[in-house]
Image (tube, rainbow over all chains, first blue to last red; front, side, top):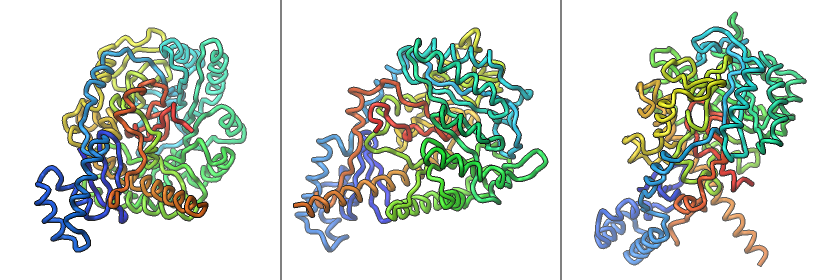
Length: 467
Length: 48
């Protein structure tokens, strides 16, 4: 299976099953599209009629190149990974990450919060050290031979319970040596309580920090407001700028959400980049379709245009030496995940769970508060094994709609929580999310392939200069 | 090849031979939290 598209002056051919990416000229683009559908003679007739700069002989040469790539397993490769999916289903999984809901409370009242202003349909609550410790013990005990364990301090606003965050980090560190584990912590924060002490602590202990801000002042302050309706931009921005600098512009994300009210979201990303941030993420809002800020099907053309514009601008800035990273475009073509990871999916409910302040397990942060998905708790372990089995089957082959989607090995079938909230089934399809993801993948491949080509050309020129 | 430039990529079929160690990050531990960014994860073995 292949996927062909044109973007920013590049003709791109993705071989879905091998992950190969080819940049081709117009004639090759058309020959590849006709390959296997018409005879060599018919293709030669059609291409020479269409393009004046190619001879019949050159079309036959192109067809030979295509056959050669096919033989090398780089074009028109077959999907041979179904056996991996069944192997993964029967294999025992180990827990490798927990999302600790350290505070179901928040000092902001963001209008789009999927956690309902931090409370997740429940009461305001803070996690105790005892509950957190039991969660960490459970993670260590159920992580098998996996060395790196990931723990995310999430909320609500985790800094409303910073004392317990510090205690839990200290406890986890104290257990690393004897258990042979290495904890990698992430802190997500809205920035309101970010101060010197927190920054020092985070820079010492946090593998990653996620700093929430939506972009331009008007965008941010429409949604990210205090309980009395005041915007947060002016309070958080200076702190985030300092935090990013203190982390040497690495190992953090400035993370925003865009909604129906800022479908020109590339302006928000570029605003943040212009302020000096180098690590950026911007997510489409997760919302009930009847919410006024929810993204709508009719927003898609403008959103697609925005993703393209962003990719083109990022390439331009990269070439000028002032590039930045955008999470969804960070596809490492040479060092990305192996096929097992791509088939298995995100690990929700199997390798990853969320823990509420009172110690209940849910498959992930987006299921918290839904009684159907309560899996157990930190003291009794996973008792609802049915949920676990349901998620174990949640791999790239779980949805028939994915079979002919070129992006399936980039998203593994998509986010189960989004699918559940939009269709009622974790193996459903959240079509709007899929449409956006496909566009992001196209843009990401263009951006990375263009940079890779630039680098190759630069190396070639350097080699020529040296010879 | 005159008209086709193949970009260097990880061969997914070959990654089946030595893949599956499971040491990589779970997807939602990074930045997204609301979409599935599998391809955005790095392979722990090939981390530079």
